Length: 335
Image 1 (cartoon, rainbow, N blue to C red):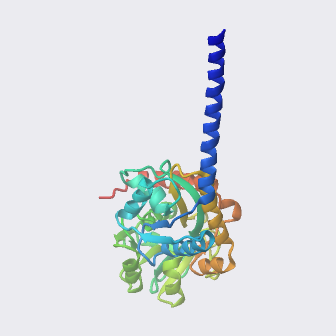
Image 2 (tube, rainbow, N blue to C red):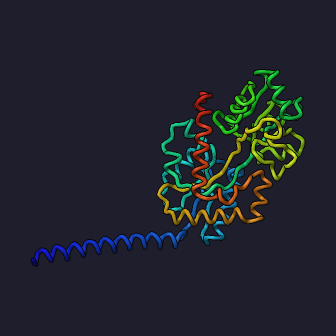
Image 3 (spheres, rainbow, N blue to C red):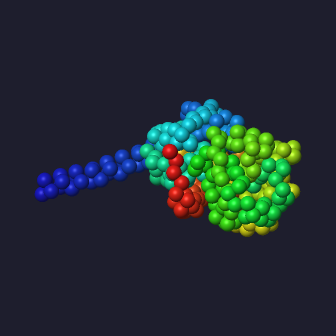
């Protein structure tokens, strides 16, 4: 009986001990989340400073710096279509101190084009969608077509004669052009460039005929009369250029190919830390000055219910389901 009692007593102690340890672990996690951040945070931007990804990242860094009371550094880790910076974020500790500003290229397209050492879905924890940046169908100013319907008619009448500038094979611009051909029944030649600036430069010079570029890169040239704009490839008109019709209004309904920017953390980042990071993003997107600055650059801020981690995960999934079949059907290869 004594040994039986001893066993019972030991079992009770063991159970109590496990309970205490579990409680201590939970308490430690809560304390860690409450203490976050206790040191500098790095936001990795996978494209050069001054580009469309860079501006929202720096705006967010400034807001986080104010909210958290800790330095927030934007680090431009460029190269290999954004895979170098994205890979660094994927390998970072899941503690909330290394983040990456992802986009349709880094977290959707690259997975369909390249053999990656990381998984764009399972190796990241979504934080929030920051904005979408509408693309605009633009052309050299001397092109005879004066609206989108006339452009499509002109392209159909001149198969394989027009040139479409892209920022590289497999880029968002390239894939938008592939989809445009499919939706309009047109054919034209693709001219790849090393990035957006030389593409736009040659469009202004009349060396290429058309492209589909982010509003951030094209609106100032449209306003200056250096190129002509036919339509915004999204559901709504741009606040910064309300005179440009949407594709739905201009005669190509449903041709919506916006780029987008979302904040991601490495996998296993605690949910409480994700919640704090998300709150900082939501706070910035609610600020009138930030909204005005982003709108002036052609960015569209998502509704509040689309600023959650769950909404970003669902949005990314939908983008993968949209672009992967297009890439496969076009048999696009990146050397």
